[in-house]
Amino acid sequence: MKKETMYTESVHLYGRIWVALGIILLLSVPVAISVHYSAWPVWNYVLKGLLGVAPIYWTVGIIEVFTYSPMLGTGGTYLGFVTGNLSNLKVPAALNAMQAAGVKADSEEGEVISTIAIATSSIVTTLIIAVGVLLLGKLKPILESDLLKPCFAYITPALIGALGVVYVSKNWKIAIAPLVFMIVLFIIMPSLASSVGILVPVGVLLTMGVSRLLYKKNLL
Image (cartoon, rainbow, N blue to C red):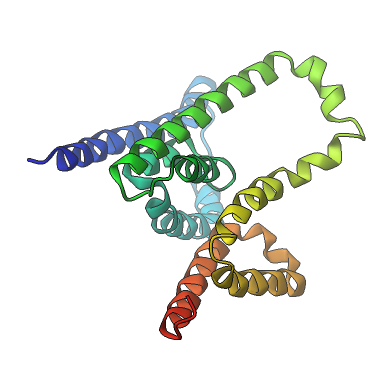
């Protein structure tokens, strides 16, 4: 058996284990609270609430797997989905690291770099959150000041924008169509800003279609 095959199989094995453990840990918190206080939710209300919310999250979750997996590689995908915060932290961290190292996600090197980048970002995030919790009393007045408050609304756009410039500059022709489409769409329907999970795959499909058209026209 090839080393690459053995590595991939081991990643899938441990990835499934950690995903299962993550689900169990997430569900154990409300279960533990219900057991401790002997207060269980009314299941009719829970099901009614889930009918309006769960289908959206299921759809977005499935779409994100197909969208982000090719970007992150096998190990990065499992680790990213277990630790969460994909679109505004894990994906940019992995893509930036692979860009700096000059490797692709579907290569062995890309697998390693992506996994290390996501693991590092998870550790750093945990440490920052821990420090923030310990110093919350002292930091709260500073973070809620009129000077800093507007900055927090632009953290994600700044992060994605800075990373996007690197990839747009590689082939600006491909970027024009999805960029114009999204700008016009959000101008016409600003409420769609909360539907990023669905619009990302739409942008990917649009980019793929335009890229194929440009390639056939010998414009790439």
